[in-house]
View 1 (spheres, rainbow over the protein chains, first blue to last red):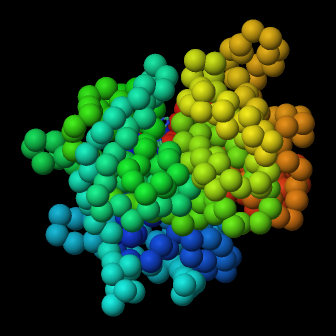
View 2 (spheres, each protein chain N blue to C red; view 1 turned 60 degrees about the horizontal axis):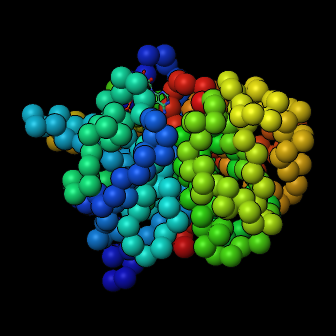
View 3 (cartoon, chains in turn brown, red; view 1 turned 90 degrees about the vertical axis):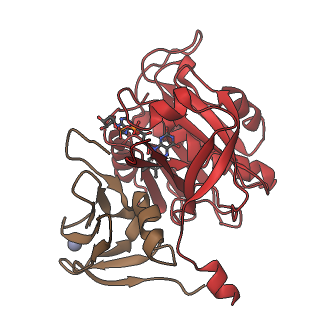
Amino acid sequence: MTADVPTHLDGNAAAGKLREIFAVDLTAAIARCAGCGQTGVFAETRLYVDAPGMVARCASCDQVLLRVVTTPDDTYLDLRGLTYLKVPNA
Amino acid sequence: MERTALRRRLTWQVGTVTEIRQETATARTIVVDLPDWPGHLAGQHLDVRLTAPDGYRASRSYSIASAWSGQGIELTVEQVPDGEVSPYLVEVLKAGDPLEVRGPVGGWFVWKPEQPGPVQLIGGGSGIVPLMAMLRAHAAEGSTTPVRLLYSVRRPASVIYVDGLKELAASDDVDLTFVYTREAPPGEPRVGRIDADLLQEKAFAPDDELTTYVCGPTPFVEAVADLLVAGGHDPSRIRTERFGPTGGPR
Ligand SMILES: Cc1cc2nc3c(=O)[nH]c(=O)nc-3n(C[C@H](O)[C@H](O)[C@H](O)COP(=O)(O)OP(=O)(O)OC[C@H]3O[C@@H](n4cnc5c(N)ncnc54)[C@H](O)[C@@H]3O)c2cc1C
Ligand SMILES: [Zn+2]
């Protein structure tokens, strides 16, 4: 997307990109922010798609939780802002 | 084995456009036949990918407008002026053309018929699309869960699914309110955005079992979510889906 002003979508919008990589839906997973400790549904993080790649930020402290960058050959996943993701087994 | 088959990486599939319906001057519904579609939940979306002759690719997300009925899916796209993808979908694509998609995706902004509690839907502009899928699923299931829809549009001519909505609203369980932001039809005095008074009057009051779904352009979603929280709604019972960076209610 070619946004003129830096603004965001929500984590929902990362569903397709993440399902390219993960076999389960991560947008409904509970995510814990490594910065402030807040837990919440990944779909409610702030998603920026105008950055190179896709960046999800914590809705309470703005720390980068997840970054996905795709090059012609590979996809880079940076998950260092997350302590964990809790995904239901069913 | 079954588990492996279900949980596979999502890949692109090519469907065929079978029908196109003009909804308003700037929005249309695209019916796509997808032989490998696994079905979907109301509120899920998919990604559409366009490839130019030189190999340049652009993809965008679109909500699924239809409830799953065993075959085909419907998308409704509102043309964004100067957009890369939506003008192609609204003006160029025609029945018989292939369309590349992947999905369904998104497991949070969904309504399941077995979910307890009333449902408040609040949509702005093309944000009506996933909410329409929820209303259609509600009707298809014969659900008696009370549903209220607040639909913010610029003017009567911008209403997407006008006939379908009125038909669904004939049900005792569905209550529909149009909010006109620029120009109202004759007999409808109120022109303006959704505000605290309107929510008080037309939306469900906060309730332990209520789920509220808000969808539309980013500023619309933010304004409505803020009003709901200020009105005492539990933020964890409000699910939002932002469609794009600009626009405001239309
Ligand atoms: C989960 C999800 C579901 C969506 N479902 C639908 C749907 O059912 N129907 C639908 O019509 N759209 C939907 N959208 C929006 C859609 O993905 C595109 O953003 C939209 O079609 C514009 O794409 P474009 O390539 O034409 O414009 P772009 O080339 O991406 O953008 C052109 C200009 O328009 C602005 N812009 C981009 N998107 C919007 C927008 N939505 N509203 C106002 N201005 C915008 C940009 O900032 C830019 O200035 C959805 C978005 C998400 C994240
Ligand atoms: Zn945080």
